[in-house]
Image (cartoon, rainbow, N blue to C red; front, side):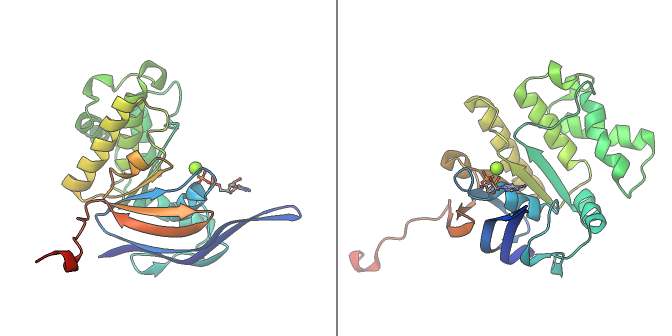
Length: 241
Ligand code: ADP
Ligand code: MG
């Protein structure tokens, strides 16, 4: 089932007299339950595209369909509502609130949710989430008291607390050593496989992109092509007897 579709998306930043065209006609679709990497060199427009996918920004032109609804022209308030209920974000720098416990960081998005949980319910759900992500004994630690990998796990717990339909991760392992990166990528694969969570992994690194099932390559604001990472190479029929 198709979850989202971009149709000929353009994004130009207007800086005084200067126009900076960044996305130049991007189209693709993502199905529910996919684990996709969006790969491209630094400056190719990945974060700009992620901001549009995550309803943080709107395209200059083109259509963005989420569950078949065109959301390209939503107001800032409409985008915020959609974002809070449907989309989880994970960033390179974790973006946790400093001097705030892991538990309070994870509970925070629940206060913007339309679910209106009681304090007790919010705390319980957040504790369960931290538990699931292996942080049962770190709930009362502040970010500065956690390793990079643990901080990213807290950020992932926070991104999942409102049961989003899409998880957007922008260079989520950019600040982690290779061993911890593998752990975090494995966690994304597990969330995708076991819970059917749709995940878009943004990266400049081919080795990281290969943890996804499909890689969409972006270059200078255009989609260059895509590959399926589990695709078998089919031998040329002419060579097979
Ligand atoms: P990536 O994430 O692939 O490194 P970005 O989407 O961050 O690429 O940036 C793509 C291009 O858009 C860069 O040349 C960058 O300077 C420009 N850009 C990004 N954000 C803005 C902005 N808010 N205003 C003007 N130019 C921007
Ligand atoms: Mg970027």
